[in-house]
Length: 143
Length: 193
Image (cartoon, rainbow over all chains, first blue to last red; front, side, top):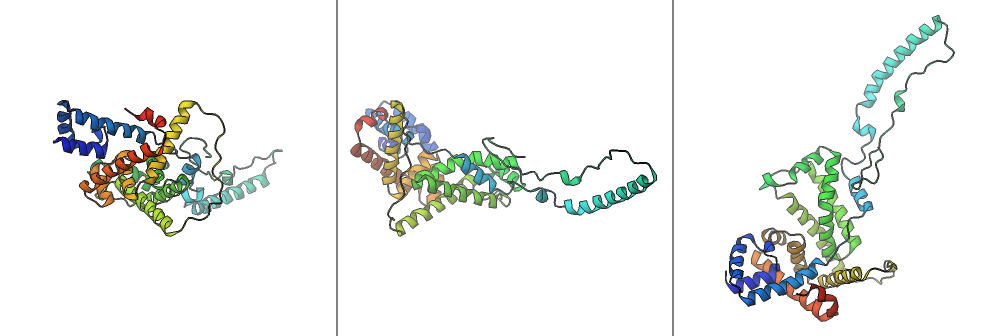
């Protein structure tokens, strides 16, 4: 590598050799080891600007932006109906079964004395639709 | 090449509607993508819009992403760049409207001196970056801030590596000139050798 090439690369990529093209680093390191003051000066100038470039801060993503992005994802907030597309058809079988059981119970109840507090069957409609709200920051989880 | 693309597996999981994969993709890409758009556009709100639009494209592409295409991160940078180009173009086409919106309120709470200086230096850099010609700003943002290789950045900008290096040199020279000429040298002292 020539000193001119070294200066050109410092002008383009800055003072940190890790940012330079990988194929040029060894040559640059060897040249630098020779202690040429002009090259040291070129690196110092580049380092000054690097420091200022590093001082530039950008805003971090806000929770609101994260929520909006996640909500638009294909897996975001699938409804119970979406996650269990066969639910309605299965409900038909369950309903028919329940109807049969109910009919059977009715027959039995008509032939036996009733207890004072009748037990109710658990309702399949009690299962709620679980909305999944995701948050990267684990701020909320409404499962 | 694509065998080592670290995003391919994640994309497949998103394609399979894995909730956790969505979270991982957002935490992996959003800060980087938002920083890119913020620096290219110099406008936080527009950058958020670009980030959102970019993620819509990710969600759309995830299920059909094929290994053998470009690296996903390169593709994503291309998406963001194109969205930013569109906005930069439309800014040039539309004359600036009278700005009747009030500026964002500044937090009146006093900041420690060091924090004030850091904030002032960041604003200084903001102005210096904004003053660069678009292509020079793009080159410095892709290579310095996004840490893309010179080959990746040149490919994204559709130029040769030599042309990229020339843009980078001019960008850094212009930044130096802007920073030295326009502002209080005392503020820059901390960055000086």
